[in-house]
Length: 466
Ligand code: FUL
Image 1: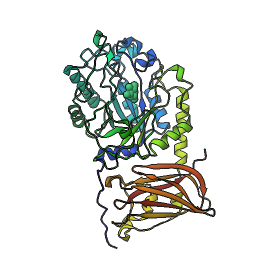
Image 2: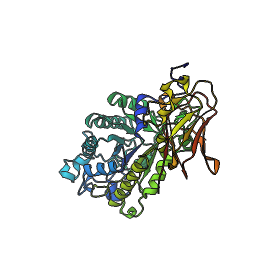
Image 3: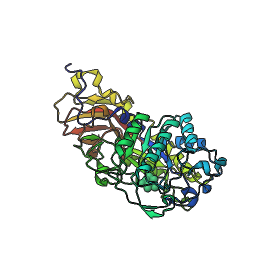
Image 4: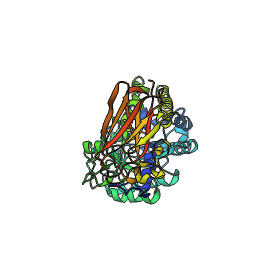
């Protein structure tokens, strides 16, 4: 035995709060507001609160749909671009308090946050920076209003895991009756650093999302698809929310100076809000599984939107599809056939049990397989029992030491010979690759062009019968 020290970190590494966020992998979005009742995607800001009147709003039922779909948390649009507040804010009358719903006594934010807490789901908030209702939008007064609202959301509703800062700024709106176009400079107007500092002081564990972080970056599209590869690292120049480079957001930058992993936001329907006309256009469980592979399976997280309908419930079509998707996730990933196999490694760091290949299949992210320093290649060989089938390969890196693997090749070897199964760059939090079905034989994972000793915490082989 030589070294029992962990390899030195390579490149930027995640913060503790980013690590906790990586572990969630998949959670939901709830887009709900006056738009649900006016059939719009972007309300102008002149909607009367009287339109907001869900007939059967039931936070427990909404949260239980999310939980059965496998979601680890929910982010609620507490205020969308139209400015209507789903909680009784002290800073405006444009809220549930002046709506007919529960005679003005309701609070959607409280109901959803409490239902999440009781089901063990994380709760997050979306507060649109653009506000087409507020008369002072565009001035410093509005920024004070925005931060006051954020303060309400971050002090009244328990722990928040994520704060979502949207980059949309369309220009025209009601603005307290002015009905005009207001342009702001997204780089300077919002004074983001002050707002980020406020969030840090009120909810130090919350991750903040925007086109430029500071904790999580947008993936650059609303289709739910991360780049291949999608690096956790990137560079941020003088971009601001609403003005970042989509291609760079989508793939990240391998040599980037910041750990700023991607989140894939996408809706289960064409729109973000509920429209009866889209009841027939709900994503199928198969489509959702495919999205999962292209988001979570590329190291990003999946933020899947479920729009409550006019009753204040998740429509049956969405609930059914999500439930089947959740069942499929649970059944596919229930059994890692690599865990039944003998696994050999080309090298084990210091020949020490702490870095043993068994760590790859123990289901723990904290333990990992590593090699001695200075090797440019390393491999493991998994000897599968004859009857073990798989068509999905999974790899995970031990993130506290950075994103280390440059390139991987997966090969299979059986009676028909040795064949490449998959190859690519970037592993990160989790890499999933669906391929052809294989039974028995050997599976070889080769790591090539290593810039530092690898630290892999997981290797899995799963079978999806669908
Ligand atoms: C966008 C918004 O304009 C959409 O309405 C939606 O909220 C989506 C998640 O973000 O920028």
